[in-house]
Length: 543
Image (cartoon, rainbow, N blue to C red):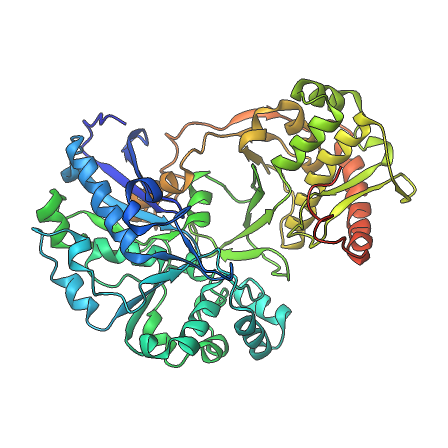
């Protein structure tokens, strides 16, 4: 993107995601003035990644080279400089990283960070700074025994969830650290600091070890989400002296300090440019979507993802409760559902002649509540609930093998959105006056699907352009971080941001219909969970 830069104040937001490193620059009016990226597989082929990762032979151990991320930052800043980006105008920067990844800094790396030479690249100088060259990332699922041990130490999965916001997950950083300590003890003993991907990235700009922020830290199975301190029980069950290796967590709005002299001399940053704490990509996306208290965001993609702003969370065995990146006194919930757009496309192909117009007509021609029919459509093993297969029930809760094409289309869409609402409410979400649903993703362009979403949640639905939402949220957070937060809220700075667009409002009978239907859906979900799962072959595409 060509640089259009006449602003005195610019804010940068970075995103160290799985497949690429991205950056967005905004001016004081929140206009995007520059975007850029480095794609790992194609632009850094020497690291031989596929999809940004290395997959071990067992398919469980999945890692990314730390130096690839470092070299990507070198390349990205070089590209920006060659395109005429003026780094001297940057007042603050922040960023995000793929959640749950961990970086192990070798003893002595802090001195290297402090003494970076601007005549050399970061990649050249940090070659020997990592005790572990390949970082376990969020796709890794090799820590089952460590999860069991952690849950046992905490008094069970439910108690761990109540303490840390989530039951033990194999990808969560605490369990990855435990495995590293047990299987690579010498490397672990040569580690002087453990960072998340987010705090690792912040450390590169700071020239010193950056604190882990509350929000990303609450995705580790180690942080007490209420006290905002490391849980002694979880830390002791993970590795010895772990508090020293992790440092003290800080609020996500914290200013960590100025950029290091390296960036001033190499790229012309102002020495007054501030580094605001980096956070996880999901929390940063919440900021980028400008979610407020009472709102829920539903991303309708290959997988459907739900973000919720929570004030009084109820952590459970499903989903995740994280500390809110915008206001550390509040929380956010994150829910992921595997059966999203691909399932909608399959039903469209089978029941609507492969046409979204026919699909939409079916939604318009069937009544709210679908005459009592409820459907569960899990083409692949679902996360919430952990079930698979197609299950359709009539108004008397009898399971049926087939229904008309129009009924099936509505059963699919209503069932998906009833599931999103049910599981969000189990974590503490509730519809209040002023609640909004923010819809994003591919299916958010279909007004008839969004009408069902509005009816099921009994709230108006807005759409919002959130391309590069993690980058954009990080840039917003950078601007907020350097202001007086006792007088200026995060939402005060967003007054100039583009307004979300109202696309659907609930019909008058929606509340009565779907409040009753939601109760039935929850009861029928229990029945579905009790049914035996089909074989692996049958657990794939059905119908």
